[in-house]
Length: 204
Image 1 (cartoon, helix red, strand yellow):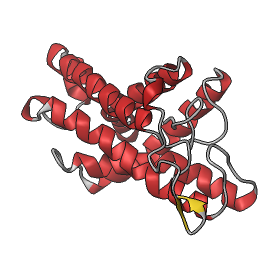
Image 2 (cartoon, helix red, strand yellow):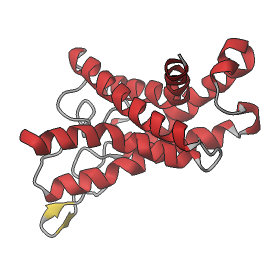
Image 3 (cartoon, rainbow, N blue to C red):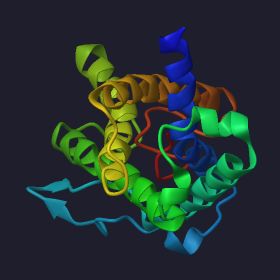
Protein backbone atom coordinates (compact mmCIF):
# COMPACT_ATOMS: atom_id res chain seq x y z
CA UNK A 1 0.00 0.00 0.00
CA UNK A 2 2.93 2.34 0.62
CA UNK A 3 3.99 2.27 -3.02
CA UNK A 4 0.42 2.85 -4.21
CA UNK A 5 -0.06 5.77 -1.82
CA UNK A 6 3.29 7.23 -2.85
CA UNK A 7 2.30 7.04 -6.52
CA UNK A 8 -0.79 9.04 -5.61
CA UNK A 9 1.39 11.59 -3.86
CA UNK A 10 3.66 11.75 -6.92
CA UNK A 11 0.61 12.46 -9.10
CA UNK A 12 -0.24 15.37 -6.80
CA UNK A 13 3.36 16.57 -6.92
CA UNK A 14 3.34 16.50 -10.72
CA UNK A 15 -0.18 17.88 -11.18
CA UNK A 16 0.81 21.50 -12.01
CA UNK A 17 2.86 20.40 -15.01
CA UNK A 18 0.29 17.82 -16.11
CA UNK A 19 -2.50 20.41 -16.02
CA UNK A 20 -0.32 23.01 -17.73
CA UNK A 21 0.69 20.58 -20.48
CA UNK A 22 -2.88 19.63 -21.34
CA UNK A 23 -4.06 23.26 -21.32
CA UNK A 24 -1.06 24.17 -23.45
CA UNK A 25 -2.16 21.69 -26.10
CA UNK A 26 -5.73 22.99 -26.08
CA UNK A 27 -4.60 26.62 -26.42
CA UNK A 28 -2.20 25.66 -29.22
CA UNK A 29 -5.06 23.90 -31.00
CA UNK A 30 -7.02 27.16 -30.73
CA UNK A 31 -3.94 29.00 -32.03
CA UNK A 32 -3.76 31.28 -29.00
CA UNK A 33 -0.77 33.66 -28.96
CA UNK A 34 0.02 32.87 -32.59
CA UNK A 35 2.28 35.95 -32.65
CA UNK A 36 4.71 34.02 -30.43
CA UNK A 37 4.81 30.98 -32.67
CA UNK A 38 8.41 31.77 -33.53
CA UNK A 39 11.08 29.01 -33.42
CA UNK A 40 13.56 29.37 -30.57
CA UNK A 41 16.41 28.80 -33.00
CA UNK A 42 14.90 31.35 -35.43
CA UNK A 43 15.54 28.95 -38.31
CA UNK A 44 19.30 28.85 -37.74
CA UNK A 45 21.38 25.76 -38.44
CA UNK A 46 24.44 24.17 -36.90
CA UNK A 47 26.52 22.01 -39.24
CA UNK A 48 23.82 22.26 -41.90
CA UNK A 49 21.03 21.00 -39.62
CA UNK A 50 18.46 22.92 -37.62
CA UNK A 51 19.36 23.47 -33.98
CA UNK A 52 15.97 22.61 -32.48
CA UNK A 53 13.50 22.79 -35.35
CA UNK A 54 10.24 24.62 -35.95
CA UNK A 55 8.42 22.85 -33.11
CA UNK A 56 10.26 24.57 -30.28
CA UNK A 57 8.70 28.02 -30.14
CA UNK A 58 8.50 31.03 -27.86
CA UNK A 59 4.78 30.36 -27.54
CA UNK A 60 5.57 27.01 -25.95
CA UNK A 61 7.94 28.68 -23.49
CA UNK A 62 5.45 31.37 -22.46
CA UNK A 63 2.43 29.09 -22.24
CA UNK A 64 4.14 26.33 -20.27
CA UNK A 65 5.66 28.71 -17.73
CA UNK A 66 2.53 30.84 -17.23
CA UNK A 67 0.18 27.84 -17.11
CA UNK A 68 2.44 25.94 -14.70
CA UNK A 69 2.58 28.97 -12.42
CA UNK A 70 -1.23 29.21 -12.47
CA UNK A 71 -1.64 25.48 -11.82
CA UNK A 72 0.85 25.63 -8.94
CA UNK A 73 -1.22 28.45 -7.41
CA UNK A 74 -4.30 26.23 -7.56
CA UNK A 75 -2.33 23.39 -6.01
CA UNK A 76 -1.18 25.66 -3.17
CA UNK A 77 -4.74 26.86 -2.58
CA UNK A 78 -5.99 23.26 -2.39
CA UNK A 79 -3.18 22.42 0.04
CA UNK A 80 -4.30 25.20 2.35
CA UNK A 81 -7.99 24.38 2.03
CA UNK A 82 -8.03 20.60 2.53
CA UNK A 83 -6.60 18.29 5.17
CA UNK A 84 -6.80 15.44 2.66
CA UNK A 85 -4.68 17.35 0.14
CA UNK A 86 -2.14 18.25 2.81
CA UNK A 87 -1.77 14.53 3.42
CA UNK A 88 -0.72 14.10 -0.22
CA UNK A 89 1.99 16.75 -0.08
CA UNK A 90 5.64 15.82 0.26
CA UNK A 91 6.58 19.24 1.64
CA UNK A 92 5.10 22.34 3.25
CA UNK A 93 3.68 24.49 0.46
CA UNK A 94 3.36 27.45 2.82
CA UNK A 95 7.17 27.47 3.17
CA UNK A 96 7.64 27.95 -0.57
CA UNK A 97 7.14 31.01 -2.76
CA UNK A 98 4.45 29.64 -5.09
CA UNK A 99 5.23 32.01 -7.97
CA UNK A 100 8.91 31.06 -7.88
CA UNK A 101 8.14 27.33 -7.63
CA UNK A 102 5.69 27.43 -10.53
CA UNK A 103 8.12 29.42 -12.64
CA UNK A 104 10.96 26.99 -11.95
CA UNK A 105 8.81 23.96 -12.80
CA UNK A 106 7.72 25.47 -16.11
CA UNK A 107 11.25 26.55 -16.96
CA UNK A 108 12.68 23.16 -16.03
CA UNK A 109 10.13 21.47 -18.28
CA UNK A 110 11.05 23.65 -21.24
CA UNK A 111 14.82 23.58 -20.88
CA UNK A 112 15.04 19.82 -20.37
CA UNK A 113 13.37 19.00 -23.67
CA UNK A 114 15.79 21.06 -25.78
CA UNK A 115 18.79 18.66 -25.69
CA UNK A 116 16.55 15.84 -26.94
CA UNK A 117 15.36 17.98 -29.86
CA UNK A 118 18.95 18.97 -30.63
CA UNK A 119 20.04 15.31 -30.76
CA UNK A 120 17.06 14.31 -32.91
CA UNK A 121 17.90 17.00 -35.46
CA UNK A 122 21.44 15.61 -35.61
CA UNK A 123 19.99 12.14 -36.29
CA UNK A 124 17.75 13.53 -39.04
CA UNK A 125 14.54 12.81 -37.15
CA UNK A 126 12.17 15.50 -38.34
CA UNK A 127 10.52 17.77 -35.80
CA UNK A 128 7.21 16.35 -34.61
CA UNK A 129 8.01 12.90 -36.01
CA UNK A 130 9.03 9.66 -34.37
CA UNK A 131 11.29 6.97 -35.74
CA UNK A 132 10.97 3.25 -36.29
CA UNK A 133 12.73 0.36 -34.63
CA UNK A 134 14.78 0.41 -31.46
CA UNK A 135 15.83 4.03 -31.94
CA UNK A 136 12.20 5.06 -32.15
CA UNK A 137 11.31 3.22 -28.93
CA UNK A 138 14.25 4.78 -27.11
CA UNK A 139 13.29 8.27 -28.20
CA UNK A 140 9.65 7.62 -27.32
CA UNK A 141 10.68 7.02 -23.69
CA UNK A 142 13.21 9.87 -23.69
CA UNK A 143 10.55 12.16 -25.17
CA UNK A 144 8.34 11.52 -22.16
CA UNK A 145 11.05 11.46 -19.52
CA UNK A 146 13.25 14.43 -20.38
CA UNK A 147 10.91 17.12 -19.08
CA UNK A 148 10.07 15.04 -15.98
CA UNK A 149 13.77 15.01 -15.17
CA UNK A 150 13.95 18.74 -15.85
CA UNK A 151 11.11 19.45 -13.44
CA UNK A 152 12.71 17.28 -10.75
CA UNK A 153 16.01 19.11 -11.07
CA UNK A 154 14.19 22.45 -10.98
CA UNK A 155 12.54 21.45 -7.69
CA UNK A 156 15.91 21.56 -5.98
CA UNK A 157 15.65 25.36 -6.18
CA UNK A 158 12.98 25.23 -3.47
CA UNK A 159 12.76 21.62 -2.18
CA UNK A 160 15.02 18.58 -2.14
CA UNK A 161 13.25 15.25 -2.78
CA UNK A 162 14.71 12.07 -1.35
CA UNK A 163 16.34 9.61 -3.76
CA UNK A 164 13.27 7.37 -3.41
CA UNK A 165 10.85 10.17 -4.31
CA UNK A 166 13.14 11.37 -7.11
CA UNK A 167 13.28 8.05 -8.94
CA UNK A 168 9.66 7.15 -8.21
CA UNK A 169 8.59 10.50 -9.66
CA UNK A 170 10.84 10.02 -12.69
CA UNK A 171 9.34 6.60 -13.42
CA UNK A 172 5.74 7.54 -12.61
CA UNK A 173 5.95 10.89 -14.37
CA UNK A 174 7.28 9.25 -17.53
CA UNK A 175 4.43 6.75 -17.42
CA UNK A 176 1.89 9.54 -16.93
CA UNK A 177 3.37 11.37 -19.92
CA UNK A 178 2.97 8.29 -22.09
CA UNK A 179 -0.64 7.92 -20.96
CA UNK A 180 -1.51 11.60 -21.46
CA UNK A 181 0.22 11.58 -24.82
CA UNK A 182 -1.98 8.68 -25.92
CA UNK A 183 -5.14 10.42 -24.70
CA UNK A 184 -4.17 13.62 -26.52
CA UNK A 185 -3.67 11.64 -29.69
CA UNK A 186 -7.12 10.06 -29.29
CA UNK A 187 -8.58 13.52 -28.75
CA UNK A 188 -6.78 14.66 -31.92
CA UNK A 189 -5.06 17.45 -30.02
CA UNK A 190 -1.72 16.23 -31.23
CA UNK A 191 -0.06 13.50 -33.20
CA UNK A 192 3.28 11.79 -33.43
CA UNK A 193 5.92 12.24 -30.77
CA UNK A 194 6.06 14.59 -27.81
CA UNK A 195 8.32 16.78 -29.93
CA UNK A 196 5.23 18.67 -31.12
CA UNK A 197 2.07 20.22 -29.79
CA UNK A 198 -0.79 20.76 -32.21
CA UNK A 199 1.27 22.49 -34.85
CA UNK A 200 4.45 23.45 -33.13
CA UNK A 201 5.43 23.09 -29.51
CA UNK A 202 5.28 19.89 -27.54
CA UNK A 203 2.99 18.37 -24.98
CA UNK A 204 3.56 16.39 -21.85
